Length: 508
Image 1 (cartoon, helix red, strand yellow):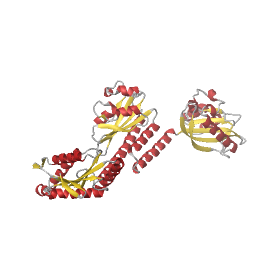
Image 2: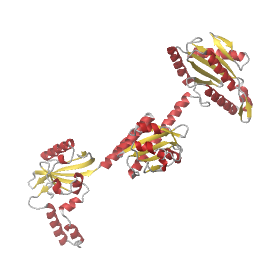
Image 3: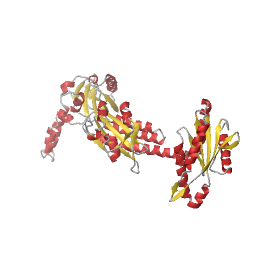
Image 4: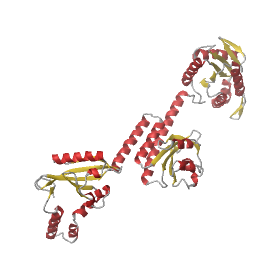
């Protein structure tokens, strides 16, 4: 019972504290006006064990040697015991891992020696591998003489609270990664690991919508077999393309309880089953404009549907991923705008010069030739004057697309401004004749008639060509040389190509 003068818990040796309390309360109730039978019924039920067994908290009493003398039903359940006799006389070493048990034992011995109470959060690791977070209060148990004879230990399971706190911290960490501009793949990987930390026996996966809007590309899947992620990388979305391809197609969540029997997986079930994947729940990731950015999926090795908690975690993960993907896309658009012409989409000077310098550096190292073509449209001002600037823009976009379609991946093209363009060709075999044939074919293609706002338009161009290393050693020298050759082409009647040779332009 509680000593009113000391405020300490006292162990009675000659009677049960709960029995003394019950008798005292019955006497008070009988002498008062509130005795209507109900109060007496409650008081009569004050049996020590049944009362303590109703506590959701863990309640145990230990002697000075740390041996269990009493434990309520909550403690018995977590210890895997059916009755008090199963745990009586045992110690913390019998129910927890050795490392944790030794730490708890030493702490409790210290508290009893000092006669101090303590409350703390602690992680309990049990011998069978379970981990539970507890808020534990340890209070020395004293007898009538004030001597410490044992310890009262009361614990409350705060695992869910700690998990939520950890979830909020990890969410904040992911958002900080987004704010700091970390690579999208790193952020998506972190979200997958966050989800897998929150859930048991789950593998998380992100697929990202390709630029074509019809295929899904690998984003992140740290715990899925790499062979499986390679197989599904690039799948085309559709009405029966597993969980992810279908979710992207429907723009709504797809829950597949049994991959082996679900018709959505008819073309992919063998691939999934060989890797032990039995169910898959996929949710599309949508932008603020309701555009499908990708999908987020949870895979389980069991045939089942997702729990409510798994659905809640999925919603959190898709929200975080949507923020990260949209941020990455915005940054990519900004980078693209900084280095590309807004009208034609071609590289601008800011991107062209470093790429040109790199091409010359590689050509020197590998003893290759580089060709620079300076291209200027003939009489383009007349197009703007006759049809308007909107029609002129359409002509520029059409001609830019024709030029882009005529070059190789290793070539460089830039819109220098207005109606002027430059192309850099890397010649592996010093084949000047072959490059000039390509340029003549390009010039012929640019001259093909196009229709703009109902009007047939034909554009011609003048080209000047210079070669590295013969006509210059730097990007600036080579482009200036090609520019002079282009003006020679203009002077010779336009719609022609001229090659510069040591500063002299020769008509070809």
